[in-house]
Image 1 (cartoon, one colour):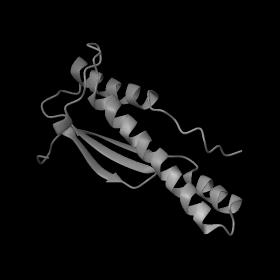
Image 2 (cartoon, rainbow, N blue to C red):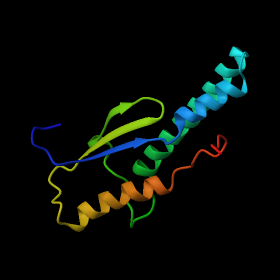
Image 3 (tube, rainbow, N blue to C red):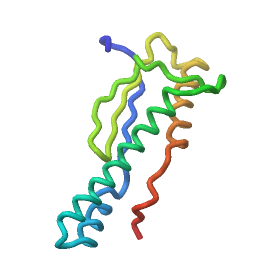
Image 4 (tube, rainbow, N blue to C red):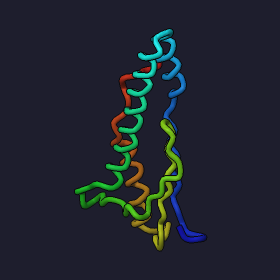
Amino acid sequence: MKKNQKMISISIDLANSTKIKKKIHDFYEGDSEKINQEYENFAKLLYNLEFDLYDNLLLSEDPLSPPLNFDNIFVMKTIGDEIWLVYELGDIDINTVEFNSVVEKFLTSFSNMHYITKYQII
């Protein structure tokens, strides 16, 4: 990234992931093998959620919502239930339709992600 570059910064943190991990631990209390297996399954769900986001941002055949430029996406941090991305805008002016389409792409990408339903907190 260049110095003084315009960017969009997005941070996603999955709500209740700590509660989900505690529920797994409490449900399988004493069975470390089963706990580890469920933690692994939960981690796979989180990684799939992250992959969905990248697919939604970078793959598109819709001419009204073209894919974002891969070279402009920087993953600053990804640790299980948290993702922090920066999108470098380059020469895009924030007062243009082009900027609005980038923002719209992020918003629709979030709404098109496959949400985790296996682990529900009641």
